[in-house]
Length: 322
Image (cartoon, rainbow, N blue to C red; front, side, top):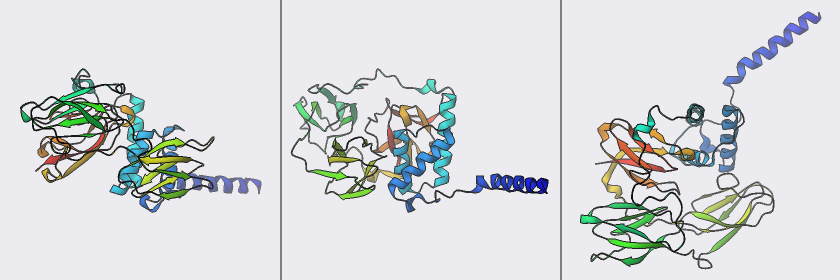
């Protein structure tokens, strides 16, 4: 009799183990059905299971949260996680990647944010478009114009996080503007009993000015985040928020690219190659997602033999010209 019960127990647990790989009770395939804090918990849990308990890197988490509204499914994210874990174990994203790694001595590139008051010179020679890495955390202003052509923001010069661009003969020296302390409306959002949303009237992205909670850290993407018109906080995070860096438009013309677009991300600052169909021609940057600068030839580039690459934390969307 005891032997019969023992065999039944073994069969039961064996059947449960066999069925387990096909179960996925905690996550729907369409992650848009979850709130953002729930999405974060699912992604963190899945990455921990795949990696043996390691924490999902901040850049990678932020990247996945951006892809969910664009249609990435739970299965796609799981596959990408598995690939990224294998890449880190191997210590290399693609074999022989050093052959196409850029030269870090490119003029205008800075590996560290400049000291406040440092001047960055950026010149459009022969009317050509040029990008200069600034490292600025705040929008730049013209310190001194050195061209006879008038430099007009949004027309022949502009900026995005970490980058200044010039075109049409604009040549100038730029400095980082001081933070607009007291001039930008601030909003306090507090998580007292779990998840909470606070409405804001910011036109650009929000930034954490200071944390007012005690032991609960406010970490973007984990305990606080944002969507158009609101900020959310969770897990005890309480902070004061204001409108953050808003790029000036004009560094690309949305009418110049077709529907062939690719999102490419350097997660944890790693060199990464992304698939790009050479029939599309030369890619160009449409929109930068990262706070770290995306500068062609420095932190992103393209070679027909290898394809599209990003590095040093650059995360952006690239398109093909019409």
